[in-house]
Length: 416
Image (cartoon, rainbow, N blue to C red; front, side):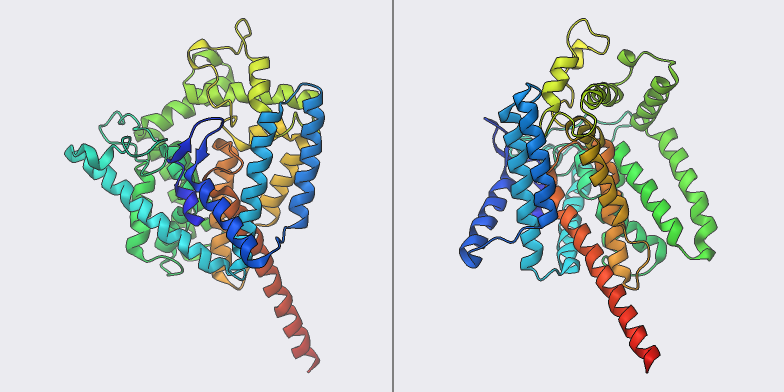
């Protein structure tokens, strides 16, 4: 189940929808759970939110803003993965630290494959870096302008690899900068960080900046100034020496400032800008609930067509399924209702202070991944997203219980 985080490069069928190999693990787990326990315990709040979104989606289907096929694919996927990962944590007696350590071990293996992939490319060993012959949804990203491969390991593309190991990258940076062992040793941490940097993905560098900022807030005063200098220095170095990042940053800045027509920028910037335009159309028509789960591709086709300003024939439809960003997709499909719930969940449940250092590290690690999901990953349940959702939730609950227990103990001691 946890391995699903890294299995986005394998699909068993493409029709009527992409059936990832990880779905078989989820279905098998649910069947085994039912056979063993004869009942399913589901989080009440999760079901209520999903029910409201389902009603909204059905109303939009009636008015022609959504279709049954698009809606069913999303609602079933969200429900099954949401329930499966919730039950996974219950079965493991809410031992989030144990599950997180399993994730980190898998992340280390995937990261090590990434370094092997880069090394194989540099020495010309094609079988070591090109996995297209035995992976069904994977592609070899063109080399960078300075002759190095953009590592994606066993995931579909570098940005997906960066998203999958983002929590592990945070833990690794925390280990290196604070010199305190919590989850990973120095060697494992370096492997993860090196492979992360070798993606040459803007998302990876955003994660590093987020991680450094979170660590800066919590770091001891004697290292505060050093890290304060490190963050802008890292940003400048990445911008100066990674052409892909520089192109995206420049393109976004030029579009915002109006210096360049949006139709002339790089595909990545155009994808975000065009999908945001489509989302705003849906949001303006139905600001509270959007057009319903799965509706964004349909809205995209309705709003972007030959003759409209935003239409660009050469890359029409780029990232239209997931809107290229979870923030944009939520805006389009769930309106303020879904967007505010997600933002509240992410920012309200992050642990800022805790006597249990490991809970705080895990919370911040997952928080960094959620931020890049909002920025650049638009799928609701791809790469085991709900594993991290429920981990984040139970990490918060565990920390709250610890606080309440400590307050009770203090009260008892004061009375004595």
